[in-house]
Image (cartoon, rainbow, N blue to C red; front, side, top):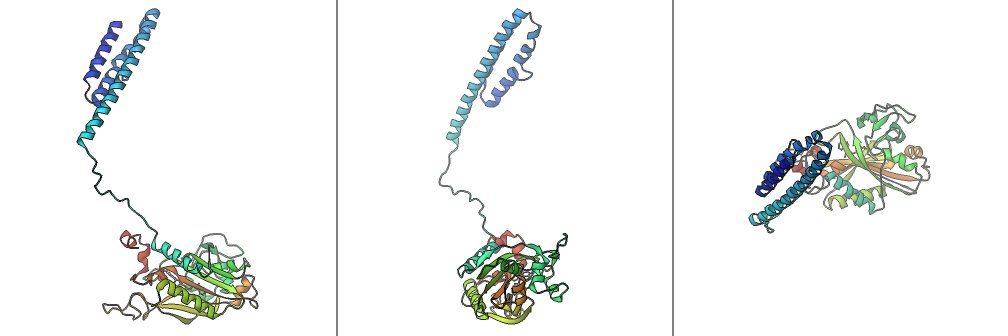
Length: 352
Ligand code: FA5
């Protein structure tokens, strides 16, 4: 057996010396030390030897295995070094070559709009609040002076949750941000200067409606608040957000939760307030040059009462505008179908 071990030693030494690549070296390793390798085979025969011979041969076979491993490892690192130094001769890095720009993302235009709206109102002391976007019927309708089965509720085209009914009624996906009004009043801290920006849901989809959209709801309640304050705040916002050239108007309207109530319109940015586009088509975005952005009015005494506020002491105004529609009226933007905001089309989103 000693002769066989000597022959194996010679074979490995020659094989390692002749190996030119790491693949050659691996072949040598497998041939001698692999699971079915020649040394492994020899080791399997040890149990058949006499005990004294077995101990002697076992020791020299293990010693040979150790030497083979060292030999192969040192040749491997030598080959690795060689191939690395060859690489630096054949390949060069051109440090002047322009790099590949990593793909850069940015905030969605609606997130940017929400941040801008928050910032504009914060400058006049309105604090951004967050209230549930899945809320009780009580906060979404009933506390807002809209009793059950009132026809006005049909306009909100609400999604109802398949959830147990409580004392506060059914659960709904908030169809407007006005659910925040009574929740905010219940806090009992005056003056109330809230700007609530949240998602709203309605069964609607066309050029000016999406089933999931955002509204921003302003609420200002204190002693002696009047319509003059409401007008001042709305004009301030319109000028900050759209610029001094855009016009706003108040149109008498009816909401159950404000009295008097108005709709706020702004002159259309797509057709320049004319109702007709440059190619003499009827503007798809607006009605005769004006676009409705939202509603507003003086908070109804019943709403103040529902929030635990004495309407003889306090008065207030509220307004609720759609973020998508407000944003699509920005100077220079000609978005004639707001559904494009939620198509996840990068060709559109990248422009912002
Ligand atoms: C309301 O939702 C009232 N809560 C607003 C209000 C608040 C009035 C406080 C008085 C006091 P209205 O249903 O008109 O009102 O919706 C307000 C605005 O939300 C609309 O003018 C529009 O800008 C936006 N909006 C409504 N539905 C959609 C929709 N499906 N997609 C996109 N924007 C919408």
